[in-house]
Amino acid sequence: MSFFIQLTRIFLLSTVIASCAMHRPMDIANDNNQELSKKITEMSGQITALSADIRTVKEILSALQKGAQGTPPPPPVTQVDLDDTDPVRGDTNAKVVIVEFSDYECPFCGRFHAQTLPALKKDYIDTGKVQYIFRDFPLEFHPNAMSASIAANCAGEQGAYWGMHDSLFVNQKRLGKVLYEELAKTLKINAGSFDSCLKDEKQAKEVTNDFVYGQSVGIEGTPTFFVGRVDGKKLVDVIQIVGAQPPAVFSQAIESLLKKTQ
Image (tube, rainbow, N blue to C red; front, side):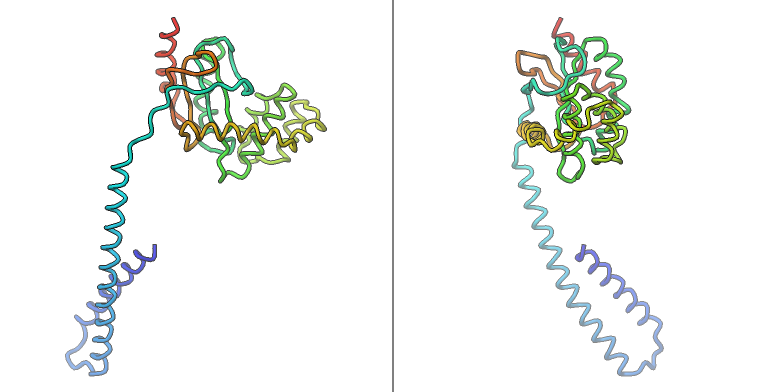
């Protein structure tokens, strides 16, 4: 940022000096001429230094561009492991699966759950064509994402995972212990057991395991989806979808996979 500030200052300085010089009377005092000459000399030195900075920036950009061009893209994900501990929505015998890696504090994840998931649930999940699996991917710059994932898993220990899950996305801006306790009460979850679970290290480990696996398959942001066919404990013929895409994007992937199961 300092580079551009310096460039702006030099440009403004040169403009002011040029404007003043153009309108200065012919009988200007010698001391003013000397001061002007001094400023011009200083400006010349600054411009020389700035030119050197520009050359350096160009060299860095050129090197980065060559490096990017020389780095092959990561191979596409062709299969994804299925984890028996992850919550499932829909018919567990469905041959097509959507696996979402998500973050409860991510606004784009919230958008998917508000705008896209209802249509997918109506057309595919509730009809038994597709099973939907949620996996945790709490990003480190979202301070409440990890605790929200743990709260959902702890609710799941008492059979209320999806109720907590949905409520957390609805209340993204209120994530925190006060909300978790409020939702637990609404969902009729045993408060003592829930509180103990929130402190249980195995819950944090389960969330971390999801995150680490997500990284191993190349996930860099949320939400990221893998849509594929079930083959034992794996998802094959995987189609990766990144971001809060509209229902049509998912429908196209799902329909192509459903044809392979017939």
